[in-house]
Length: 284
Image (cartoon, rainbow, N blue to C red; front, side):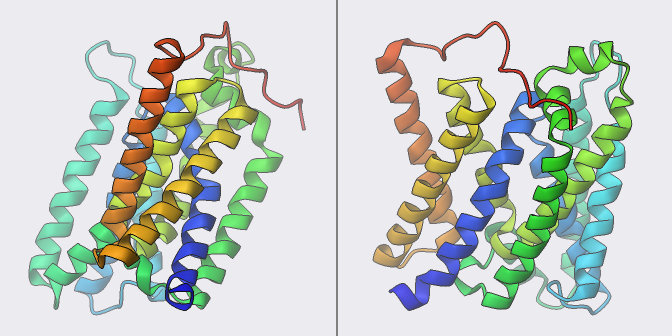
């Protein structure tokens, strides 16, 4: 079991490490489905590569997927429309639907199109290779390093946008940089775990964390802990039942959320309210 599941376990834990952090930003910004839309854009870009005869996991396939996510980053960074009826979530939903339609249309004409779409949806986590893991870890490390140096800007814009407006930051440009970095991560992740798991890694641990706290440090600790536990349970369940790994891990995340909701209710209803989230780190 260990030899078979170890690469998948290492890959999944690496993904949890960065995705849980990014998920906190996504939940705080209130753009819950931006990760799903960017993941679908990455899938659409990979499908374009397959349509032109490239392999989705090749360097060319990665460039197509990355180009699609950068386009999405540009759209999302300027989609804060000042209209009470047109929300940013509406724009995100439109992008997701269009990207899904493009994926289906191109897959219908591509060799092994149906299998390709299924792999993009559920991923191939069980068959991940060590070279894929090290490549992903290297890219994630670069993104994490950039986030570390720019952490105050990103955290303030996500958790305290009114402060960013008062200081007259160029929020759209900072949003564009955030979404580009986010798109880079999602592009790599979709090729390993698929769209469903990318969404689960990003959203569910962060949602569970926000049930109990609004302090950045505690949010990260809870999200990382819950995400890691769900990954271990999902992989173990997949091995024991011989069911598909990706969907089983998604179900493990869902189970963790149900348990967290029950615990939150036992502790006394809604999450503890703070006047404001804890102050982001000092200027860098």
